[in-house]
Length: 106
Image (cartoon, rainbow, N blue to C red; front, side, top):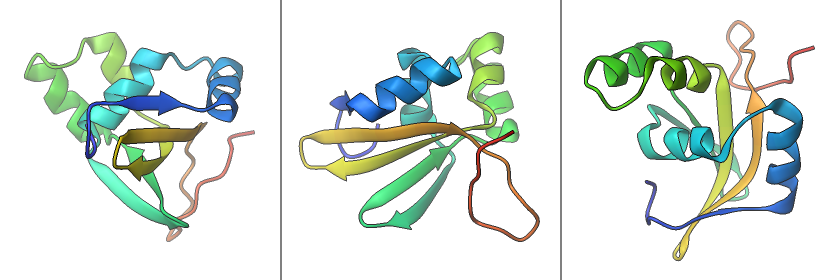
């Protein structure tokens, strides 16, 4: 994991996880095995796993096929803290050409 083993999921993140059908196990997997880390300002960091990295994790036996498919296309926005990682929100990513911003899928 990032900085520490403790993961705290805030109220807003839990609501978004429920709305988007994302389990806590999926969030923990993204935080643990993330391949991309993008600083988004105000101490927040966006963590994602690329399809290529998920495929490698599956073949190495770190992820099941189902989990490897789930983690692709999701981003977890976190705030790293000394005591662990605070999850701010979870969202589906849609990358526009030449853009580093995320937007919600319609």
